[in-house]
Image (cartoon, rainbow, N blue to C red; front, side, top):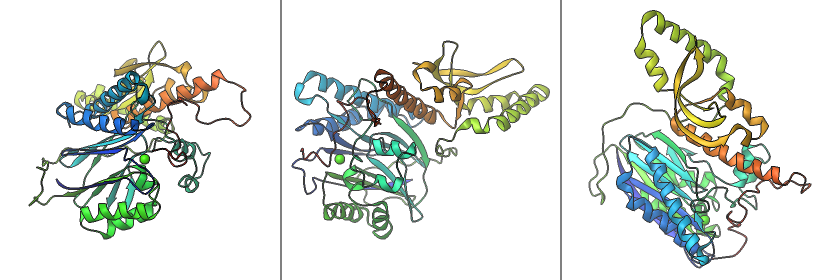
Length: 405
Ligand code: CA
């Protein structure tokens, strides 16, 4: 696949400076939305982009984990700059980064910038917002339709540079001819709704004209924040006058995007039966390859003998006294760090569809453990529970309401 790229960034109608940064460096594309006091947000987002660019040779499409590694490096660089300079303290940035890999796109994401896919006229948000309101919607405490205009919609719960470590969402998606990928900062998505973004991407064929139209709509709607869009049009046609040499590659093996996390334990019994039959077939028929395939293509998040939570490749069940999994990553997180209602899920191993999804689950667990820690610290402090107590000094202030630069 080839890609035609368009990008536009704009300060908007209210802010004095533009704290968004973006990267167009085929096959890497990113949007970063900085936060912090005067100038600090700009330092944070531009540092993220500089680190991604300088580490681009370390990114390998064969190992999407390297993409998360680059964001962790950016996190580290911003964190160190903030620690070294009092005027930058508390700065951070979102970052949504994509790597085009022939007929696939790999996605690494932290914060509330977004990646959308327009395919066959349907617009879908591929990234999950790491925001307070998104979490409240997920937990059933807020209706999705109320989230778009919620006064606290801009408070993010994850960013690069606000902590020594960061959890990075990873995903991979197969691309099709005609797909449009839109990366944007929340200055677009908080000013115009899903339907309006979809209308522009459906009706404006020229990518740069579409990018310009999106920014113009956000400005017309008030332009309360910096607006950045990067639009990637995926095509199988050879490019005539494309400035950047677009990546082409042979089609890679099918790999479906990870579906939304569904409680895997709901399917445990039928699956266990399946596995048992498969392994019996292996034992009886000597089909070693089949079992090997099954183990190599299965993942779960489980615990070791010390109750430490980690990522395992294989299947959690012991069958006929044999184990069929390898631990590929361990953490210092233990079952007792989690709220009671979560522990059962992981005792027996929670199956996931991919390594990337396992990393995501681990990231979420770390967040939940942090929340749980806070709750334990102040058991009866407030009659109306503050839903998002963690890292309060570092959380992004309300970007709409505080009138800062
Ligand atoms: Ca913003």
